[in-house]
Length: 216
Image 1 (cartoon, rainbow, N blue to C red):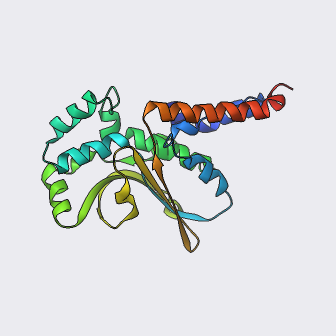
Image 2 (image 1 turned 135 degrees about the vertical axis):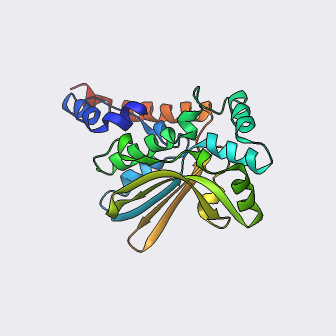
């Protein structure tokens, strides 16, 4: 994931020049075919992408809503093996920024993870998270791309509990594509590891279907 988020264009050029196959569906939302949807939207005028793409911060937010503080919630995520070895890869937005970078690269936008503005989840206090719930809102860690303004970011946002992105709980990811006069929403599970493995099998099957082309 990180390599694609940094060197997408160079890697794709290398693969294409040598007639190789590159499967990377699992890099974004793993068990939900977000990249397949993006490939199907090429040629459409997408104005906005909003997404919740990180299960760890979903879990941490849910624990804080129940009364834990950040330290306790992060330690719990580590115990449950939901966090990266370095949890700040998630909390400081590197993981969702990498995923957003790959999504935008797939649309042909020349971008790397370093072009995406990141705000740490911890810029929002525990009390603000719990206060939002009491008032009918939720705090979600949202990856957003405003394409016509070339503004790309990952930041905590207060949203209505009726917002489609509020459905992103635990391993569930939600992605909204705003295009022309309509909106396409894809919702589904990301991890855990067994789901990621199944998506890698999908890539392997695609390779086998196209294998003669790669053996020329």
